[in-house]
Length: 535
Image 1: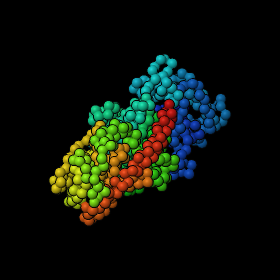
Image 2: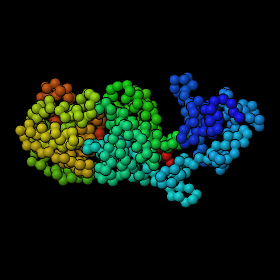
Image 3: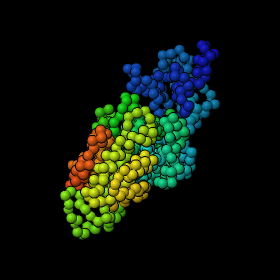
Image 4: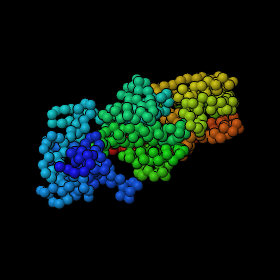
């Protein structure tokens, strides 16, 4: 008969949970067996670090573990007559069950089945992808893709399209984590799971239990669009890591960041959360050098510099369409007093604008309803002057209609020259940009679309990512600072001069595109390493 409190007697009757920790977690934190190999220390407040569980073999194959019990009077840790004093023998016996008799000196742990997905396929590190001896077919690899997917932002939708294509080319089934899963499934033909709030982690964990890894992409590590942006996206990584049982997290919770963009982050809390999640990732590949420099400065090691996934898009078809619109053997148009030349009525300038980011605690959607109004008059005058000087028609493209269209409609009403407002989709946006002579853009992927099709581009520097992209390949695009626009001192000649500079630099687009596409190999290597790791 054991002496002591009732709680001690209850813990003593379940020593296997105290020592081995079943799938539901430790029975009592105070009854842990300190020396057992199921626990290891990691850095923390205590110089030795807190106790953290280390994974044990999943199969029941007569594994024997011997250790020195903790120096405690708890009955579960006492020595027994048939063992050395102070020693405890913990055995995971072959085919033992929870009802097996407990002999002196032996803590008979119950047989635990390995974690299996809803398709009943083994998921142990060695056989969860190869089937089993009963003839169960191997499970197709499934990788969850996380980003700002399911919105009407064409840039993020193009990222999802390219990442899904990269996985399919490797025989992997993509699963998109989306704020609008029905829309995502219809547009991209992928399985999509919902996640609209950082508080929805429990539902997301249930949806991701059949995923073997998660890949985060896009410019999501920033607080420019919203102070909650980092918390939202990092909560997805945390939910995925917790989607597996505790006994399998080391094998299953594989996370990578590929084509990651890192911008300004205000607040230490968001930065700490981003650093914590990036340190847990098996691979971190940014889309530019500036993003890598920020992560390294924050303390994230082993950051590689790759490229934006959209650069993998095949631009051959849209480039041929652009060539058909302007045959290479056609006579050169006559120059005027501007480097921009007048040409036939078929030439147009593509204008891609967006509302500015404003600091505040409100969401990006709420802030952008009126933040663009001080810009409209200045932009209308400048674009009118550019159209008159070049003799081209302006074509306005909203890359995120819910935010951009109200601004572009107001801009069109203030302009004197004829303009066209066209809403593209993820399937024709590259072709739409390819048929223009010049691109004026505030959208990052509007500039990527111009680069893919050898278009001269003027980038409005509203975010660090625009400056970083414009500097690629020795500076292939011209850059326009926005402080004069905020101050009400933006002159039409500023935009005209930037357009002339862009035309003069247009010969560098091929070099910049080649350099960026060469860096896509870093993305591919990281993705291949991820697949090798989970197999």
